[in-house]
Image (cartoon, rainbow, N blue to C red; front, side, top):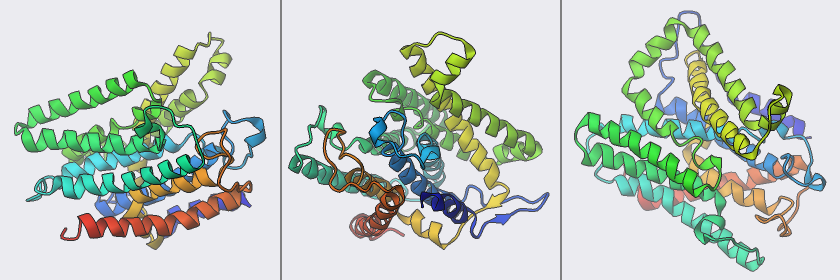
Length: 364
């Protein structure tokens, strides 16, 4: 039954899509409505990604592997790269509006931080009730998906420093670049996993794209087929090198090392994350997407991300810790994903309405 998901995802993406004719371009490719529609779609893909990691990831025990969602195992960072890019692009574009920084913490930070704390507390209570061992630091290992929120808040705070407190444009960008490199170094030193630093730099690239939007799009239009093919090929090569490093090294006859695997995976992910965003942008220049379902999902992408992980864990083969029994194991992949979707959407939407009521009630 899980095979139904593949055509359903294609229908969701291309339902209502408009293909531009030769010589025509989608001038709304980087508009709020168009990018948010795609992010709504990406939120669904991330659920499939996390579901696949609990059902058919190669690092699972053989007894827990049930194939069917395999194409989603490694795609998560590509979707997250799009989120960071759009966040950087969007916040830079919006900061020119009068009063943008007046309620920056209330409008930008608190609606992110509050639902995260709520979900963290829910995970914490369930883990305590089920006596799940929590490694230190507790703030991180209670709810490991919190890394994304930490990165977003860091870059929002860095943006505030650069474009509100620092007045000189060249210095603002210099500090922004330095802060991005610092984040990369700190995460590498902390070393919780490559997902902490293989995509957040796209926030900076989003700012750069916003600053040079017209020139960038004009450049892409001049040799559109070349840019499209090039971005796709580099993304595919980087993706393969990052996620199938050990196999590729063996085929090349090179010596495999854990250190080489780490750097090969990280470099491949960084390159493919950047070129994937470029590839999606290029596709968007010719294909305008959007339909009622994606317009609905785009309203609560953050809450969707925060909530769906609870059900992915509750109904997987184990809860958080692989040695801990699940709350209720749904072995059938189709039902596992379907139940997670059905429960996530209304709860995430309700959580978004609550955050809007609390923090954005007076927002225009």
